[in-house]
Image (cartoon, rainbow over all chains, first blue to last red):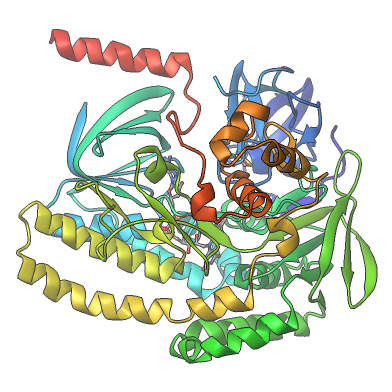
Amino acid sequence: MKTASTFRELEPEGARVRVRFSGQDLMLREGGNLAAELLAAGVTPFRRTPVSGAPRAPFCMMGACFDCLVEIDGVTRQACMCEVGAGMEIAMPAAGRDGDA
Amino acid sequence: MREADLVILGAGPAGMAAARTAAEAGLAVVLLDEQPRAGGQIYRDVERAGESRAAILGADYLKGAELVRDLPHPNIRHLTGATAWQVEEGRRVAFTLDGEAELLEGRRLLIATGALERPMPIPGWTLPGVITAGAAQILLKQSGIVCEGAVLAGCGPLLYLVAAQMCRAGTPPLALVETQTFSDGLAALRHIGGALRGWRALAKGLGLLAELRRAGVRRYTAASELAVDGASRAQALRFTAGGRTHCIDCSTVLLHHGVVPNTQVARSIGVPHRWDDAQRAFLPERDLWGRAAGLETVFIAGDGGGIGGAGAAALSGRLAALAIACDLGRLSPGERDRAARPLQAALSRELAVRPFLDRAYPPFAGALLPGDDTLVCRCEEVTAGDIRRYASIGCLGPNQTKAFGRVGMGPCQGRYCGLTVTELLADANGRTQDETGYYRIRPPLKPVTLGELAALAASQSKETTE
Ligand SMILES: Cc1cc2nc3c(=O)[nH]c(=O)nc-3n(C[C@H](O)[C@H](O)[C@H](O)COP(=O)(O)OP(=O)(O)OC[C@H]3O[C@@H](n4cnc5c(N)ncnc54)[C@H](O)[C@@H]3O)c2cc1C
Ligand code: FES
């Protein structure tokens, strides 16, 4: 799921913190946009659709499409609307749940 | 519950300009935006852009810094990270902030929630690695992240801007695959008078094209039959142009064919909408000040009321603020009109170039009426063929489609399928878009968790016992 990223950081300096995505440790820029930082770290997909299990990743980056949904510390949220915090435990949303709670 | 004279939804150019004008007229303003910082889509994170990012993004982006700098005012409270999910009685807004739901009541409400990129359903558009051109720009503005090995596909000025910004950042796109045709260009010439009045926008467009030429970016025009190939992520863009089929290997595809008003909030409170053929979208009905038809307390400004660009958005925000200040007795009608006159003149200059742009860069026909196998509703995975099948068994409007296939009922609430479903049904049934209509939008506009609601219930019961 983690591959060489096609999203490159122009200014890679800055403090990094450890987060876990699907059991993998990642070092992301603290306070950065979570979806952007996961993309830069090579994460894809972010989730699978509840209907067909198709892989999905961010599409709009502005909170409208909901394709960046992830489960952060047990709560389903839009990664593009969150900031990176140290120690975040991130998982792909459980199958059959799409966050329209 | 918090209270204010004016509640503004959205801190883009429209919302920021309105807030400042209203505050200067003496109104207590609460400005609410789900983003962590002011700016909206165009001026996203402009305050934090360092010198190198600013050089990539260009002078027009930096104009936003002025609006953001002007925002602090004793009469303005800017709530950041606040997502509005319900509006009641045209004045009470329920929103979530820091994991807790809250209520806010204003004597007037200004909806300044901006635009969305027009959905561009082509085969493969849901694959990871396919993002909107605006999303690529947000990655650059907000995070200083560029996409490598990308192809841009679609049409319109924003496509050129994003391509030029990618060149400046040292990651030029592999190609620009444009869908507008030579005859679109010819037809647009009819509106050249207006375009010349808005010559700044035109000159900027020509400058961007020259920049792309210098950078050696390959361009294809009149492209059709666009499709993204790939199993688990985007690997290539296929298309037809100049009578030949092309296939460009790439790792990201950036789609864009214009922006459309984000009408979710206005629709949820029953503002009537009308189809606009030139913008090929529904626009909320409002008067020249932006007041919503039939709703005395509600105003709409910026791209959410019709696409006009950032300059027009700020001007329409100021005009709405003047009308609101007059409503609430802070300005006399004479003072309002005097202050409005130069703004209205500037607004008509800003809008002059629009008919030319709308005609020169019409949305890609193949994505307005996609092929049967193409997914239309990303959330519930409903295809264009499904929608046509619903039409063939008597389905006339988008709301009826929900009963057949949950289309538009996923978390995005139809934001990225609504217009396509209207177009498909209108086409299949031989009816107009107005006759066909749009989804009924119901709160919550964004998902709210039980935990967030519990906080609201607790604070409400505290208020009533106090
Ligand atoms: C992705 C994207 C990129 C663009 N880039 C450019 C560009 O580079 N150059 C250009 O000329 N034009 C660009 N445009 C067009 C440009 O957005 C508009 O012309 C201009 O920003 C309109 O300003 P506005 O104030 O109406 O809305 P916006 O700037 O879109 O601001 C709307 C604000 O409302 C907020 N909002 C929406 N819904 C809610 C809610 N429910 N709760 C809380 N807050 C909410 C949003 O977070 C946003 O900050 C872009 C459009 C998009 C969609
Ligand atoms: S990427 Fe669209 S909602 Fe996050």
